[in-house]
Length: 397
Image 1 (spheres, rainbow, N blue to C red):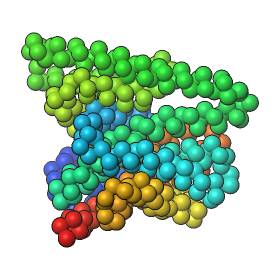
Image 2 (cartoon, rainbow, N blue to C red; image 1 turned 90 degrees about the vertical axis):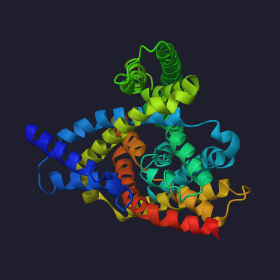
Image 3 (cartoon, rainbow, N blue to C red; image 1 turned 90 degrees about the horizontal axis):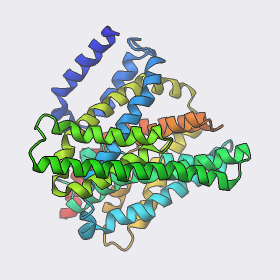
Image 4 (cartoon, rainbow, N blue to C red; image 1 turned 135 degrees about the vertical axis):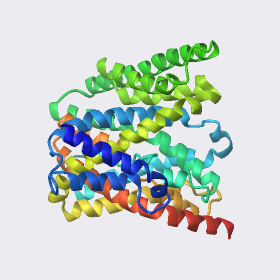
């Protein structure tokens, strides 16, 4: 145990001292951690077993996604939509449903073993994009601000929107298998979403008001203020889960409520939580490399590989391009926005949820998602800086 902890701690330290240089290169942090996990895992060096990290992955991924959902939604500057509402609104209301629909149709065409609800669940699992993996573009000043803001708002909100959609398809599939009436399925689904929504609104609302009151009285110290947002986010998630509701919905809605109540102070309060979330995400990527990548790629077929490529290109880019017609954006900008929809942590957590649900097609769906995320990790990481430079030249020209 301590040997593994030593290896992990030393590796994280070594990465931390070169993180700034890495962010300016074509190699991203998640790429490094996935590769390191694979090399240190059972397939190569064997420093980490493949079974224990697999059991730990669900808990770590759950907490990481909950924290990311909370911070992303809290940081989503909804006022930005008043000035630059065209791009993110169209991408969320038209592009996102279009990607789910197109992904569903492609899955039904390529994978005859999947039912319609399983195919739809797969479409939802791969429609969510990863804000953390898109930071190389969102924080790059060479990219026009309207494009950066559009991607930032979209990636911050679409994973939270995909959660209830995924649960709907899982409930419908399991209900159809068990012969449960649609009314009972809807009732169970409504309870899960309703509990998550209620916990997010009430707990985050009370927590934010309490924090604001204590802030005004200067009861909050500089040391402890760094943990308040983290604790509140995890509270929303865990309370909802313990009440048999959706902790993801609670975290997402809680972040929105927190951001509205705290107003201008939101970013200052959320920033430490973002750092913790980024660290947990990198550790999740390492466990992903240890426990998942090698096993899945041994079983991968050409159909899975082709679907992954189409998911990252046609399935994502065509609906986004169509959603931006009439906005005045150039062809280059539309293609840029469509391309930078990296798949990541949310898709991995959705995979774990589907695996735990007992859906018959869960294993195939997991292979597809893992393959898509891995390819996305490489292609989006390598292309971020070069395409940012190109879009800058295109906008100036």
